[in-house]
Image (cartoon, rainbow, N blue to C red):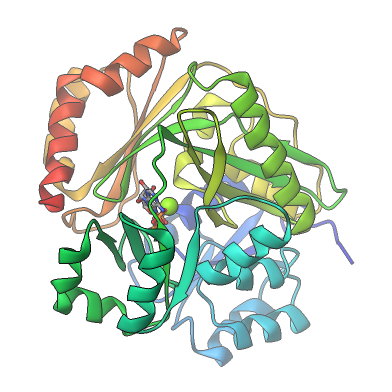
Length: 386
Ligand code: ATP
Ligand code: MG
């Protein structure tokens, strides 16, 4: 049974990272009270919350205690354990439900779910041991990527196997194989894209415009609303996104990452049942942001039809880029800079992002190709790859 949550009522957010923070900012803008739960006292989202609670995500009592204090519960932290989630779902209002979250917590379950719904992804095999891996490589061929089924982000817990000599890297392989894994055939994509889709309690679905993404060392660097995705490819992505939203009975937003081949084949890389890094551009670039849309959906209000206001480029700011913020301000005086207030600017850690908007998307695409500051920043991420 869905409910409407009205301004002045309280939205509880599990997780106080940048996604929790931007969700909290949207909720507050709309007049909601925000409670936030995180493991760390200095979680960046705490700065925009009416009240906070610090505790482990595995501490059932504390999480339940927090959940009882709110009118509706949502999450930016996807890895809450299944048992606690089920309890939460029984005793509090969690409009997003638990099934889809539990499916997407595990890459293998996610791929099975996609298959059951007729949605293509790269060839894969479950792998638990070195023997499994060798057998699986016969099916996928080289190159292939070994990934842990759980807890991955920014390419962590992954190992690319280019040829049989990479199997000699025993230390790295056995570390990854300590947990359940999946081997994925390397998909020879021409480019990577993503779509954030929203669905409300009335069953209305709205997709944000697709973006083209550039990853460096497994970390998202740039997203640009693109002029180059052929309409047929965009239509395939939108159709897949709508299918995912309906089949999962999504309430809120979900990020969907795609690989696109040279001849326009579209396969899903992975799903994230929450706001997505490649959707940050929607704060400035569209009439309603992914965070606003999520808050509308979970409070039982109708989502808003989405319009692109102007072509937009988003660039992630990692720890190693922070010292160059003064340079960024000089180089792109028109940039809208978001900094998350995450404390120590550790290497490869997402600290913020910036936004550039221009009527001519080709100009933004050219910046991605050849701007000197972006080139330097990209090289500062690449160093990790070697
Ligand atoms: P995040 O949660 O930050 O998106 P993640 O750790 O879940 O990252 P993936 O999305 O699985 O990582 O992979 C990160 C990047 O590595 C992809 O965006 C893509 O560039 C590359 N990659 C991953 N899997 C494949 C594949 N099967 N074929 C080709 N490239 C891949
Ligand atoms: Mg990814």
